Structure formats: C-alpha cells, structure tokens
Image (cartoon, rainbow over the protein chains, first blue to last red):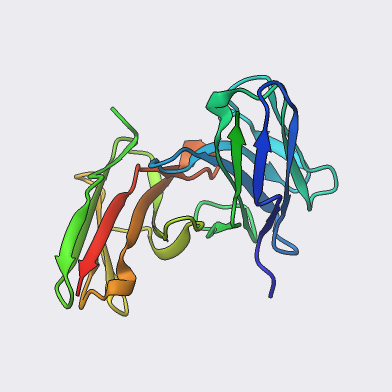
Length: 115
Length: 112
C-alpha cells in the first residue's frame, strides 16, 4: 500500500516568505507527527495530532509555526515569515493507533532552504 | 545533558564483522525504544523496537535493553556494505504524548 507522502519534496524560500508543507499519512492512521531534522542531527519533535485534535504542540519553535489536520487525514505545516534558521528537512510520520508501542512510519520529507 | 545520547561516529567496521551501536537515555519514564536506519537523503526506517529488558533478535539484528542502566544497544552481525547508514536511537516516554525523542545518530560505514 501507499506510504506517507509529503509535498513539495524541495522548497526554496526567500527570508520573510510564508511556506506550507503538506503531509498525506497512510490511509486510516490515527496519529500524525511532524519532526524537524537539521543537517547532521536526529529529528526533533514539533507537534502531534490524534485524528483532527492537536494534542501536543510543545515542539513548535515559535508562533511562526502552525500546523493543522482539519479532517483527521491530510496535515499542513505552515511557517510564516521564514528565517534562515528554519532551513531543515521537515518529516511527517503516522501510526495506525495511539499508544507508546506504535511504530511511526516516516514520509520522505520536505527539504526547506531559506535564503 | 541531552535526553538521548549516541556516539556520532563515524564508526567503521569491516565487512562480515559485528557492528555495535550504543545509546543512553536520561528519562527513567521511557517505555519504548526504537532503532531507525537512515540512508543519506532518505527518511528514517524502523529496524527494531524493544520494550522490556533483555535481548530481542530479528535476523542479523539484535537489540539489547537495560532499563536500570538506561542503556540500549543494537548489534548488527555479518555486516554488509548495504548496512552503511546513520543509525538513530529513539525513545518514547509515558509523559511524552507518544513523541519520539531521537539521539543525534551514529554514522556507520562497512568497509568491503
């Protein structure tokens, strides 16, 4: 079956522009996560949805970052007024159910470069 | 102190040998432990998960967990050049709302 997909795969933005990153989780997956991965580092948690409810947004680095999942499937991560330090790979992951034993399946990521 | 720590490497191992990757974590409430493999420019892929103390084997891979020492490791037997990748250790805490907390990854190179 289809895995997690993300678009665009690459995004170049000028500093100050707004960007929107899309995640299509595996069909039927309840949980959806966003992570940010800087070059040479492990992914860092940004936010978590269970269906349409955003249960944890503690990792969002500033109020310029906003995520939504209005119908409990597709999710969008929006970054307003992008800064150079926002340059990273943004990974989306989904899991079938909620629970601490559930495997998270990762999408290919969106590589964002802010100039 | 980082929540999850790994030696960033690079770790170089001859083909056919055993590669040993180590990880320590600081949160005693951690309940789930995962090893992900990440090829350059690709997304993380789950290799092993372990939840209780002891060893768990899957093919050439063995994960070891020691909660008292807050230590988890991954052994790769009969290492192949295709095993060359970055290995990410990740944990989930009961207080963490199921988020994965990753180490910085260990870069492994298998030399033919």
